[in-house]
Amino acid sequence: MLRIDRVLGSRLESEYSEEIHRLEHRGAVDLVNIPVADLARRRLLATTHGGEELAIALPRHQKLFDGAHVMPVISSSAGPGGPAAQPAAARAGKGGGS
Image (cartoon, rainbow, N blue to C red; front, side, top):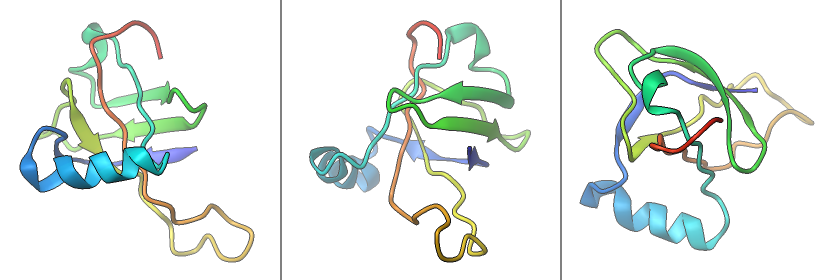
């Protein structure tokens, strides 16, 4: 399970949009749809389109929104055989279930 602990920004921000576009072409971007009713929650579990389970735990001052750019926390203690430190991103959407 991947842990998300902050929103980096919007995928529409020029700072992120070009890099996200490049990562999408390499298959390194995964999306997640969060029901609108759950966007105000700061702690929730979700599953990406690619099947990755996410544990989202945001600080009080942050909220998910349509187009939110997030990155999983990569533990340096993963060690050999642990999860790969591969770039990934998720997007909160207006769609149905997770």
